[in-house]
Image (cartoon, rainbow, N blue to C red; front, side, top):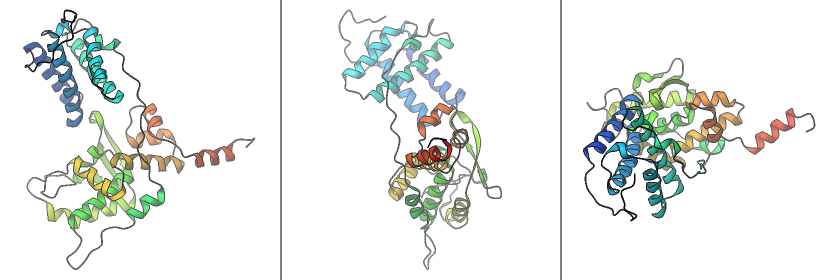
Length: 312
């Protein structure tokens, strides 16, 4: 229940009670160890739930068992009053639902109040998609060697772009690749995706060549004891950070890695691939996600209609 005595809670900065802190810590372990979510996703969930529990404390609640639907709704209302975007509120509502479901499963809550928590509907914004000639114009200009040889970072960046476009993998999946995850003979890579689900993705010849050139002529110049088995490494030798990969792609092609992923999927569809194959390619658990994520150009739709419809 809401301990406000009819007044709006005043924001205070105080540590969480032992009950709330223990629930948050258990939730964080659950996300990382049991659900296998990426560190970035875990941080996002924990950050949102931490904000929720801070609101709970402001309402005078110190026992996780007292968390109910009215408290959740009041917290979302404060987000709205603060001018938060609909997408932010929707994300925080999703985090709250995940937390209360977890707490109910663990016996910390008698009922799951989050199951009845609504959130504003959001409109998914699709990233920009490059035309085939745009991406080809970039990738057909690999690093050139001068008298000193090609710069190792240039070789790495070229291999990154080739591989992202060839496979449509996520930037986190790219940065998590190890050297032995790529099979040059079969032209495939082994990817560890969301939820620690493994999949094998085909790779085109140009991408295999770019990665091989990076491995042979670029990586040895940057490798250190910190590199381990990482396929892509940073300038100081550690495993490549996703933020660095994002900057590289944005600077080279004007869209981020997610844009290249969407571009690869779109070009597959425009080339005649079926939606189920694209789902496997992208590693989506649900076909509905692929249907939202991808789109088919109007030119292809018109072309298919003219070929297939008897009255076209």
